[in-house]
Image (cartoon, rainbow, N blue to C red):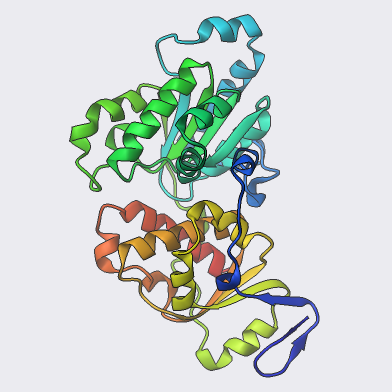
Length: 344
């Protein structure tokens, strides 16, 4: 039961604050937690809605179905003698925002034999940071399939790390499916001197058969921008109408709190939420703060959490410089997701 600032009681609401949450995740829980998020718990290849005007969508779905079927049908000896063979060991889906890449990736996870893992690129780098490279590699080597969503290289360290990890996993016979908004050969462009790490980037690209998915952002069909902010004087009344578990935070306070919680724990931090209410949203002018916010939005999107805010419109949360910089695709994906969550 929650009582808002006007004194009105909503018996169907539990009011919390994300800025009060500092969850802890044991290293042993990290592998077990690498499963599709709640929004994709029951998706399948059959439930993927293709656009008839974009044949690449059906083609990508069919290729993934074939890849999973071939991986699943292999016997022990086939898998043993396939280890170390030259040629692509996985599938890489390249495409814009909202064309259903994550849906297809989760469908592949559901259809494949287990054990298998599903996580974002950042979650895998966090895993290596928490467990150490050797243990993370050894644990992931036990998987029949490793699914990597939102593959992106933000710094040279990640380039070398992930190149080595992907190579050693495929050498161990693990199949990999990855999605990204960037072709493998272009990873890292605009964020660091990618040409200096071309060998590592090319080694990544050589692990995959690459398929491009075209199409419009399904999250924006009929929507051009996020919902309008709620006037500050009306925010209490709007919040009081929400049911379920609602996290209400002062936006600057929330951003400050994110710096105290490792991004690998953001998912645990937002577990169980039905809605998030942000007071006094402002444009974020610090890149590090903005990237942490992007990670939070990704985890809220995974859980389909409704967003309501006062202050600035959500499409003004990133600066023009950020939207034109090396992390542009991260920010544009985040704006796409903010539009979807605020317009529910």
